[in-house]
Image 1 (tube, rainbow, N blue to C red):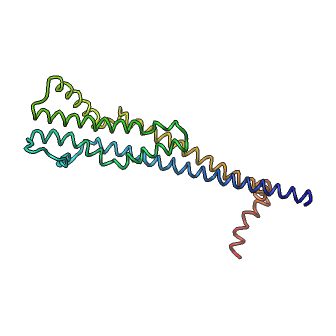
Image 2: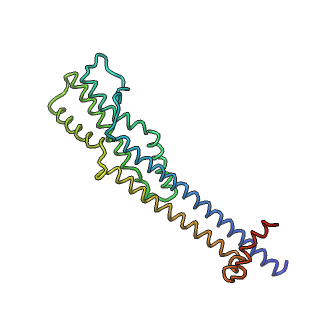
Image 3: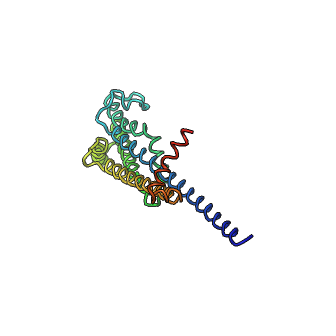
Length: 235
């Protein structure tokens, strides 16, 4: 094998390696964009879900699907149903909460540990809603059985006030909505940067093609290159 042949093999190998690396980089960009897009969709869904959980609008039978106690008085039924309605609303979005938790790990895997705390406010809020509602139901049951004390009554008043503050949406000063909007903004910026990177990569690939690079520099070749697809179609 002569020097020219050997050099041709080396050049061809380098071109093949560069092509493979370019393809891998493109695949990685597309995967990252898919993860970012999926996360953005879930963030929008979570924002809507939090609004639905805390809407002031309900229906008459809300909270009544729980198991009732034998000989449960009507006043107790009203208190228990009222608190359980919050748990019902949260449980309607259990699948979404599971997807959010899984997505947090996908974001960490693709973009780094800085996404570890993504959606933490949502999970904390869900836990607080459920725990406060359960505490109120427990206090109502103890009231029925005459087991409450002045100390437990004081704790109940605090829990009830906290639940009321949590379960009705305050859009202007709401920590959950604020965090979700920040995540949405971060994801939109992230996806935009990936798309920009993909576009730069496509332009670079287009420009590095010898015929297209020459066509960019020479208007006469550019015109002929642009007309070639039309000519082929006529044939």
